[in-house]
Image (cartoon, rainbow, N blue to C red):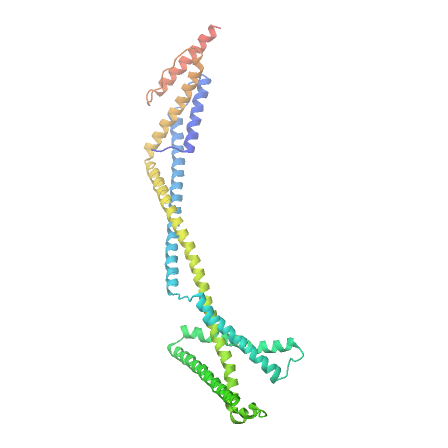
Length: 358
C-alpha cells in the first residue's frame, strides 16, 4: 500500500511533534485510540479523495488525447484523399503554356487597339496618357471574358447537370473551331497581301484600294476575327491559368496542414503512452485504497509509530547526557501504552535523581 502523500506526511509530522512535546512536558500519553482513530479516518478520506482526483484527471487527459488522435487520423485521411484527387500542373508548364500566352494575347490586343485609337480614330495624338489609357482599356477586354468564364462556365462545367455540361462542352468546341477559322481567315488575307505585294501592279497603285475593292469582306472579317482571337484566347488562357494557380495554392495549404498534423500526431502518440502509464498507476493506487478498514488501520499504526518515535527521540536526547539507555520501541497494539508509561516513569526518575545530585 502506497501512502507517499503530502497530507499523510503532515499528519505523521504532527503526531511526531506531539510525542516530542509530551516527552518534554513529562506528561502521560495523551494520544490514545479515541484520538488516533478519527485522525486516521480523516487522513484516509483526504488521501483517497486526492488519489481519486488524480485518477480522474489522468483518465480525462488520456481520453482527450485519444480523441484528439482520432481527429488527427481522420483529418490526415481526408487531406490525403484531397491531395490524391488534386491534379497539379507543373509551374513551368503552367507558366509557359497558359499564363504567358494569355498575357501576350492581352498585350497584342493593346497594340491592336493602339493602332485603332491613333490612326483609325485620330485620338491621343497630342496626349500620350489619353492614347495609352484608351488602348489599355480596350486591350483589357480578355479579363472581362475571363470573369465570365470563371463565374458561369467553369462552375457549371464541373457541377452542372449533364445537359448543361454537354451544352457548355459544345460551346467550348464551337469557340475552338472559331479560333481555327479566324487563324485560317487571317492566313487567307495574308496570302492576298503577299500576292499584291510581290506582283507587278505598278508603283502608283494603292494596294489597299485594290484589297478593299476586291476583298472588302475578307479584310473586314479578318479584323473582327483578330479581335475575337485576342479576347477569346486571352480570356480562356488566363481563366485556366488562374484556376490552376488556385489549385496549387490549395495543394500547398493541404501539404502544410498535412505536415503539421503528422507532427502533432507523433507528439500525441508519445503523450498517449505516457498518459496511459500514469492512468494505470493512478487506478492501481486508488484500488489499493478501496479497502477502507484495512487502510485506516494501516494509517493508525503509522500515526502511533510517529508518536512513539517522536516521544522516544526526545527521551533519548534528554537522557543521553546522563548516560541512561532507553530500549527500542516494539511495535504492537497491546504494549503501546504500557511501553510509553515506562518511558515516562524512567524519564521522571532520571530527572528526580538529577535534582537530588545537584
